[in-house]
Length: 137
Picture (cartoon, rainbow, N blue to C red):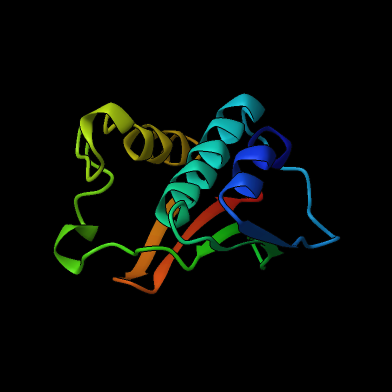
């Protein structure tokens, strides 16, 4: 997914830091659906940093019964008042020509459909952290 986004990230002066766990187990999932979620989170991070450049850190880790994929950016962040709405269908903070408001909603549905969770922490003007947690079994 980083290869697909690579030129756009480079053009927008966004550095990517990869911190991938070496011991990632195979987990039962629909690979194309997870790719869609990852692509959406990368594009959202890129848009949050597009005008000023920045850094996107992608980290994977294994915990006792789950794997996590964490996307951390130092972009514009999300206002606290709307953080709880970002996974709702058609909720959008971008200009209408920039999106449909379905990306995070679809991503949420995909992760929930795999018995996982997608979480967000954000601070306006400092950035956001999106975490995907998926069960190993």
